[in-house]
Every structure is written in C-alpha cells, then in structure tokens.
Length: 190
Image 1 (cartoon, helix red, strand yellow):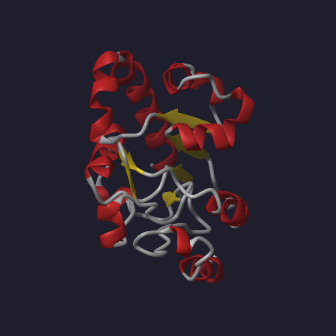
Image 2 (image 1 turned 30 degrees about the horizontal axis):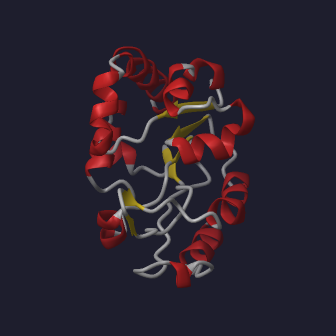
Image 3 (image 1 turned 180 degrees about the horizontal axis):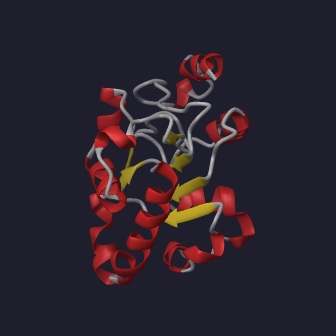
C-alpha cells in the first residue's frame, strides 16, 4: 500500500488540465474499514494537503458524529475522491472531478484494502460511477432510497455548505438518513 500511495502522490496524468497543478490527495491503509468516496479536493484542501479539511469536512464529521481523530485514523477511514486533485474553479463552484483518477487508481486501492466493510458514496459523481444504472435519476431519489445500496454502499449528498438549501428542502435526510448512517459507521469503527 505504501508503494501505491507514493505512486499516486507522484501522479501527473492530468497536470496540464489543472490550474494549480497536480497535488493528489488520498489516504488509505490496508486496515481501512470504511472508504469515503467524495468528489475532489477544494481549494482549502489543495492548500493544506489534508482531505476534507474544510467546512464540508466539518459537516461530514458532524453527520457521522465522529471526531477529527477518528476521521483521520486511516485504519478506520480511507479517503479516496473521484478526482484526487483540485480541478479548478467553474462558473458556479469548483469544476467536476477529473475523469482520469477513478479508473486509473480506485481498483488498485480497493484491491489493497481487504478489510473494507462500507463504501460511503458522497455526491452524484460517486453515485453514478459506483452505482451505474442502479443510481436513480436524481441525487435526492438516490439518497432517499439509500437502503437499496446497503450493506456495500451508503449514499449521501455532498456536505458542502452550498447544499444547505437542499437539506432544508429535504428534512427527511437529517431525520432518517443521518441517524442510520451514524449507526452503521459506529458499528464498523467501534
């Protein structure tokens, strides 16, 4: 695993497409039990080099009801985004994750983590890539039907503060999904 992570850290496959250059951000261990598959690092994460080290990460940890220490314990959580580098700024937020990373690295990473008990798919890009045709037409419908994807996957919206409006419109998420997700996560990492 150390060799693979070093190889990923040196990846420059899409460097010419990245305004700030390649800085792959991923964490994993052979002992990881839960894999968090998100979109791509934002600018704050690109600058710090620490995955989910921003408001979205704060929200995600709050949803899971876990500490930063638990979250960054690689024997508990691997953090493998769809795109490993900051994709740059678009018109209405960050650009989508680069498409090269997941096909190039995800299987190799998963093959080196025999203790995975859950894959948390965060956001539409992760849903579509992993769920393929079983993903619903909308993110809302996919998350609403999260039970269909268990026990392998737990599907979530992106925890970005930009999604606060979505959360207010979909109160069932915090009432139903978050408590179930907390229970599943706690049972795995205890």
